[in-house]
Image 1: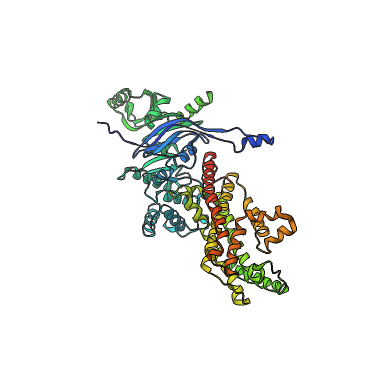
Image 2: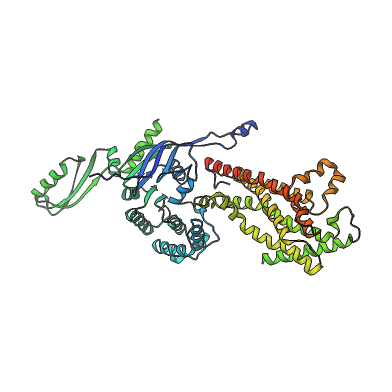
Length: 320
Length: 250
């Protein structure tokens, strides 16, 4: 039985062209006039409730614009975004009540306030009472391992801690929808792994949090996301599960089998072959090797990666 | 430290004005009834000017600061509405100004024996009304800062204009006499003129409510027009910044 999930974020025919401020006025005074920048064109997709949805693409592809439109910080030129039924332009206040946004932007905090004071300030803006806010901040500091720097001024924090603080702030009001823009960009490998565990746990909790994740870390997207959208030059080129997307570049995969004991020798040997995804070749080859007395030490497969898919769509975009 | 230095500077200003007022003692033109005790008139003028300046520059300055810090987006991402942003952004400045404005009157009374009569309550009503009207101009100024990413032209214009045209340091009638009626009538277009006139009528001349209805109604007229207009302009400015994606550009 297929479970049909409600869309938590619904994006329809969304386009965004950044206008050039005072274009006519500049032209009148014969000042150099830039051309309007098209950031998004006709973007349509849904993010289901409780889903971790990845958005990947090159710098300037439109990921941040899309995230900011969902967050009501940028207005679309045409098209609509609804978050749990509320339109992001017409009912922006309702949308803001339901979302948390964490970006890698360092300029979004008060530098002279401590981490704790910053979160307290934003908790009050979210309407949390002092008691609940303090409790929530304690919880989040523990979860994100920020206790040691809680009383340090934001300006004196390391980039990684600033980023974790941004994630803590986005989680303050228990938002049902979370927008994460490169949440692990400045984190050390251990902290990044903990962050991924946290993101994963948020989608599994009850009620689950719907997460729109943009990242340049493709392995992270592959691990975390149920579905991934590839965005290039403002257009969505493909949306699918990471597995299906990978299979788009190549139907075949390279298999490397390391064995020992073949032909009566103890030396290890590496056997490579190419198989079509879904065929019986791997099964047949392994059985044959075992029949010949080989001990299988390792099997390694090389499939098409999300990077290949990204490159494929990028070159298609260039051709257009 | 800065706080205490400001207190001392207020005391220095009051003391200076006290000695300047001694030059004019006994020379006041009888046509200018509010200027019989110039020190009292200047002190009310300065106290109120302080308020007015905060009214039209505080919000624009804080919006500009938030834009430059990059925190405006984070604030506008929370579910608070625009009027709350407006009030909260300048609340601290108003609190601070209330204290320093009160200091002018307090030092005048305690150290230099300036007598204020009339209803303080009525004077506060005038002060609040004038401040809200000027805050509307401040909201327009903040809208300018948000769209043009430039400082506060209204604040500079209205600040200098109020000091010159609204009778903070000299009677507005003198402007008409020396500069002609056209220039003199500019003072009538400034809400600060009417606010200051009302406050002085109450505090210096001891007028009652029924005697100050004229400046009161003029201020109410300004309020009825400017409040909805300025809120509308501000919401348009925010929308424009969102359309341009320039909320944190500076």
